[in-house]
Image 1 (tube, helix red, strand yellow):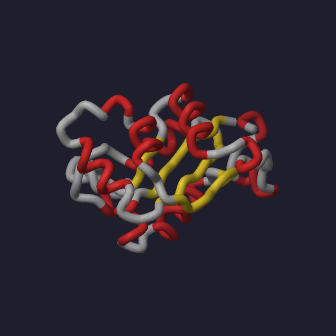
Image 2 (cartoon, one colour):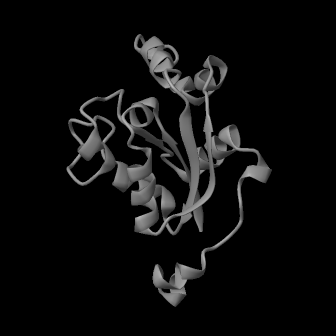
Length: 153
C-alpha cells in the first residue's frame, strides 16, 4: 500500500478543523500510520518549499506556516496519494469543488487548509523530512477487509 504526507496547516488548526479533516480521511478508509503536532521553522520550510523560495510571495508562506503548530500525518492506503489529492481539491480554495476539504473550508490559494504530497517520489521525500523511521508504524487495521476487496489488499 502507498503512503502519503498530509500537513494540516495553521489555517486548519486556528479554525478548529483538525478533527473534522482527520475524520474525513479515516472515514474514507485511509490508515494513519504516523501523526504528530510540531512547530515548523524557516529551515524546514525552505527545504519543503524549495521550489517557491525565490517567488515574491514566499515570505507570506513562511509567516503563514509558522503562525501556529501544524499536524503532520502519514496516511496509508491503496492509491493513497491520488485519493488524498482528490479529497483535498484544487490548491486554490476558490476553485476547489464543494465536497473537497479545500472546497468546503477554504477561500484562498495560500490559506488552503492542507498540504498533500503530489507524487510517490515527493511523498517518500516528504515523509522522511517530517518523520523519523520510528515514528511511522507498520500496521493494518482489522477492519481493512471492510474497506478493500480481497484482491486489493
